[in-house]
Structure formats: C-alpha cells, structure tokens
Length: 80
Length: 80
Length: 145
Length: 145
Image (cartoon, rainbow over all chains, first blue to last red; front, side, top):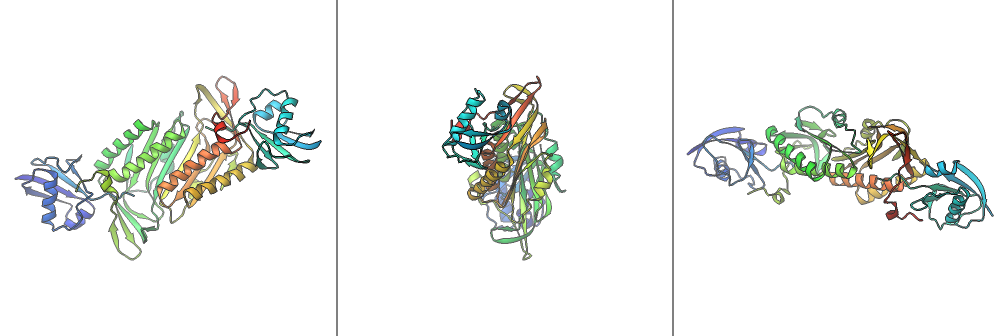
C-alpha cells in the first residue's frame, strides 16, 4: 500500500467533489491510481483523452507511482 | 501620333528626372510607350519585372494605348 | 516567456516588450471569447489552469518553436477566471527577422498550447447551463485511455 | 479596408475597429523597419506608394482572401514617407470565427500586397548611400519584360 495524494482539475474536481485527497492505494502505475479514483467516485465520465502528471511533471499512464507521490488528474484540455 | 501622358515612379522618376511628362508618340501598346521613354532618357535600368497601368487601371504590356491616355510606369515593387 | 493572468491582458505593453532592432516581421494571435460554440449561445467563459505545468510545458513549446522557426522574441499570456464576450483569452506575439518565421512560430505555439497545456474552458450558456469543453481531437495527440 | 498613411499607424485603434461578437480568432501582422538588409546596415527607410492603385488592388486582395478563408473583419494600413528603425511600415489585422482562417487570410494578404501593390522602398544606409529595393521574385509573378 502506498500513500498517494490525488489532485483533481476542472470536471474531475466537480465530479469528485474535492480538489485533492490523500489515499492509501495498492497502485503500481498512474493508470492504477486513475482507476481507483474512478471506482471510488463512481465515475461514468469518459476516461479517454486525459493526461496525468506526477509531482508536477507530465507523466505517462504506465509511469510508476511511489509512496508519497502527488498524482494530478487532468481531464481533456479546452483544445480548439 | 498620339498624345500620351507618362508618369514615372520611384527609381524611374529619379532616372527620368521628372515625375510626369506629356509626349507625342507613335505607340500602339503600353510596351511601345515604355520603350520610347527608355530611349528618350537613355535608360540602362533593367526593364524586366516592371508593371504598367493605363488611366489608373492595371494593364498588360500589350494593352493598347489611345490618344489622351495616361500611362503609369511602375518599377519593381519592394516585395520581400 | 509564458504567463497566466487573472487580469485583462495588456496586449500593447506586451507587444512593446518584444521590440528588437533586427526584427522585420511581427505576428500576433489572440483568442477572443465569441458568442457561440457548436450551436450554443455562449454568455461568458471560465478558464481554469494548473499554472506550474502551464509554465513548464509552455516554455517547452516556445523552445520548440524557436528551434523550428528561429525567432527573436516571443511571449504568451493566457487568462484564467471568468471572461466576458469579446475579451482576450490568450495572446501570443512573435518577432522574427522575416515574416515567414513570425507566422509559423506563432501558429506552432498556439496549436501546441491548445492541446498540451493543462487549461480547461467552461462555457456558460445564455440558457443558464454550463459545461466543460472537451477536446475532440485529443485522441490524435497521444492521450491515453 | 486598405489605407495609406503618412503618420504612425495606431495599431491599437485599428484592432479595436475589428471587434466582432462572432470572432474567436484574431491574427495581426506588422512589418517593422529593421537594422539591416542583405548585409547592409539600414539607417532609415522611405516608402513611396501610388495610392489610387494601392487602394483598388488592395481591396481585390482583401476580397480574394475573404473568398478563400472566410473572415469576419480585415484591415490593412501601409505607411509612406520616411520611417525610422523599429517603426511599423505595414499593419494587417484579421478577425475570424476560428484561428485557421485568421492566420491564413492574414498571411495571404501580406504575401499578395508585397508583390502586387505599387509600393516602393528606398533604403538609406548608415554609409550615407541609398537605394531602391527591387523584388527579386517578381519575375515569378507575371511581370513582363
């Protein structure tokens, strides 16, 4: 189990109802963290087209997470 | 013979030493007018890349000129 | 340099800061809040940004643009918060020796920041509804599922 | 609208005149007097224009750009007379629904007016010499011998 701080932005924050929470998770990658938060908040939001950062660095979904990391979950950007 | 007013611009004006002159010419086309003015002013200026207008309308070098027309001789534009 | 601002963008002052005696061409782009999007009448817009990554990713974009289209000066400012119709949401200015680099660098910068920077847009409609605007083309830019 | 001006170009006022509630993208281009050209140190520039044909050809260019890249608003102003280093010689502003038309129309306008409008540039060099600048690429644009 790792202690991971998760930060939610824009529609993710509105859906989770919190901007940030610290969780105890059995997560290996950023993707595992994302799936845990989706399960936790019963998300039916589309989970494609999102980006992730770890400790203020852009990351990939298969980037490893370590105990104490902050994972930032970014919904699709404004684009256009 | 036709009475043609010729207007010179930029380097053409400096070379001719006048901005405008009215000439009696045996000219059929704009090109004939241009050649007459070149001979008149002993021009060695490059004669390519120039444009011509007749009575304030862009014209071609083989456009006919009529008695009383004003022919505008445009050296190459600034471009770039 | 890239910045995030919660105050109106002073484009004239920004442009003056790009003065360079070797610059022959200057290209600027501004994104304005317009009155409709995909058939919805828009009342106002709200932008949210995660500033630390806007800055770090934005600086990467500016460096990439300079490598591809060598420019002399470039700056970008993105607004956050509530914006009214007609307001400037994003400004980019590029000064270069010639116009080709100025146009191409400016276009590169706006195209990349639109898809890469963590900035979200919420539209407030005349109907009273609101919604976050998604990027339909993000899938083409390597976002994971 | 295209204009010729012997006074400094008030770009801020011009930009305000392009305000349009349906515009989401605005692209501007400015040509600045730079300090060198093809290895010569430039001291100042002098522009001469034949205004009646600048206006009529310029309006054609603006209409062609609108047909190709439907924009909402566009204006162009070209300076004439003596200009110092750093001054704005030509300004073009285009407001369009989206950025693609704004960029492309703006680029089309500057590219066409550079080769089609009767505007001549005389460079005054630091050495005291001066010379009219020719367009080397004019041959490619149908100028007759």
